Image 1 (cartoon, chains in turn purple, orange):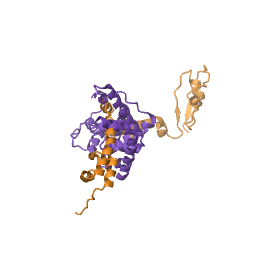
Image 2: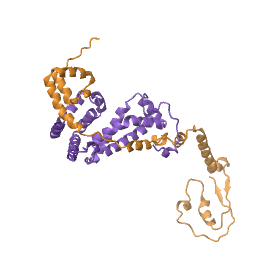
Image 3: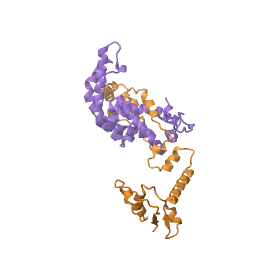
Image 4: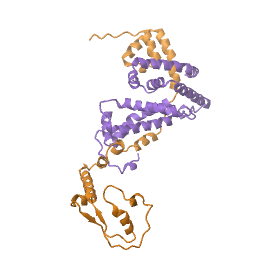
Length: 204
Length: 190
């Protein structure tokens, strides 16, 4: 990275813990609070990709997801100096902030349709590529049509690998309520995606 | 320990699959093993699982978002290390400056601020502080072209808190005169 833009700032002594895999988020945040760039990068490497994917899934747009991710981490940077170790987990805090930002973002913007996706392309059959893009767009549209909490629950559990307990903590509801949200979401998605699902199964 | 583990039922199996889908890795770890055992012997559970797999397959058609390389750089570049002024907008000026300069403990700044305040007080009010009662201050003669102003306005200042008109309204300056007076203006202190 280009560190030139920071050369006028006092350079704090890097903490010996920054960058070590076993270091807790709380310890890294304490280092960030005193200006440790290595700790900042370690936190980014640890959490940014997952938060970014979450925001992109929820918003249905990678660029918008990156905007939300950037804002989420800027808020974390400001929060680091007053972060209380032993309180809420950083993972939970990040997803809460990202979720709220996604809600705000969705009120303002509509996602752009997928037009080019290299990972969906079939080098032999261009028609198959177009069809897969269509199906991906259908899934995205169906996800976007879900109520916000159902959508968040599906994204967290199906795409992000969250457990029911983790999702319940994030949404401040019981595990049973999460399972109810998931079941209702999957019913709606099944109805919306039945043709696409049958077609995909036929390809297997 | 006599914790009794509830056996898996078809109803619970259905609830699990309807909520978490057909992939056992998404099921709660505390129930996964029992659910898998139940699945081996229940044809109904297998049918529910197969139906749920259709939706899982459709959901998996949505590709994983491919984050750009630039996002990490953007977030890294946004880092403003040791920036307590931005982090705490309520800090005072002295505190802000001393926090910004890590070598400073603030004592020299406080001393400097106190010296400035003391100097201003002495400069403005020194005469009043040290002059005995009923003493008058003798002003120096002004330049001829400003002398009428001083005589008419400033010299009338009696230090009673009233702002001279010449200072209050600079747009209404009197015409200068050629009167040449050497008289000192006397300003009573009280």
